[in-house]
Amino acid sequence: MTSIDNQDFSRRPTLFGTILVLLVILALYPLAGWLLSSIATGGQPLESVLRDGSEPMLRRILVTQGIGQILVLGFPVFFLASRHSGGSPFGRPTLRWLGVGTGGGVRPALFGAFGMLLLQPFLYSIVELQSLLLPLLGEAGQALVQEQEHLDRFIRLLAGDGSPGSLFASSLVFVLIPSICEELLFRGYIQKSLALNIAPRRAVLFAGLVFALFHLELFNLLPLTLLGWYIGYLYLKSGNLLVPAVAHGVNNLAALVLLHLGGDQMGHAGEMASSSPIFLWPWWVLVVVSLFIFSLLIRYFPQKSASAHAEKSMPGGRL
Figure 1 (cartoon, rainbow, N blue to C red):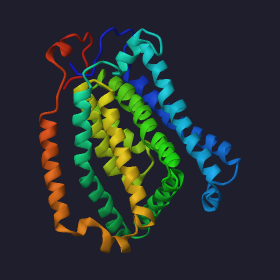
Figure 2 (tube, one colour):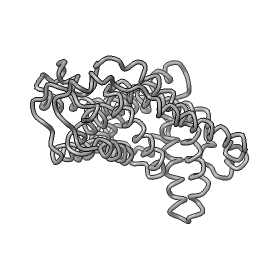
Figure 3 (cartoon, rainbow, N blue to C red):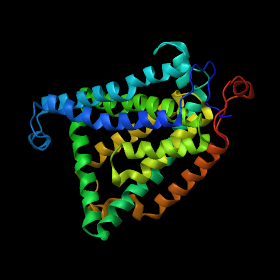
Figure 4 (tube, rainbow, N blue to C red):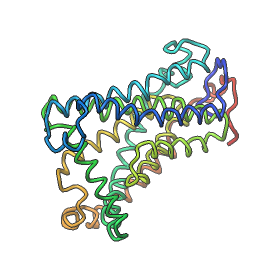
């Protein structure tokens, strides 16, 4: 029996139905993003908007990013889950089915957030090593690095100049909204539904990989997959959506801060050789120590009590 199963089921999700829902949402999200961006830019090519750097235009694009995540990723999940909970879309049975407001999530959320901070040096090292090594693979590797540099510049432009207003807006769109909407979809609905049909640990692996592919960043596929697996593990062990959402938010906040601090030098292999900490041995001591503490945290991560497991009425997949 999996620790993320909840009681009071009305209709069990099927494996085929779960995958179909996932494919539909993954197809609609980029389409909705393109449509909302076209509305925000008035039909102008995105490249010209970025080149001009018009603050009002960039702010509209930022707002549409948040709206798209809410409308396509977050909002539909409540209606999908209500089909299995037997309640209304925003009623308590549906929220409990998703793992929202189930109680006892504060301590695991703090553990999960601390674990995410411990992972940051290791994940940062992967990104820096990729930036250094991929150009050695020829044009394909160079294209990946350049594509990531372009994406970083785009996000940095949308994040604004660091003023209080820009910080609030970028934190809302890049940290708070994704950590809620993406966790509602990938953990609350997809991983939960998969775990009722296949082994819960396999559900974590599959949902984590899909989570990485969803971001359409081939350069960051490995670190995003590792993040997805860790966040999925948190949901598996806690059964409370607050836990992965907080960890997700901590990671996004760390990435946003790093983008602001990195400036235009991020991703340039030539400059990285003289400035990146990965060329200093104390950095790797930090990586090893942080991973060791992370392994201890995983080992002693707080789980649901035996009574909480016993109240479940529907078995999940085999372990």
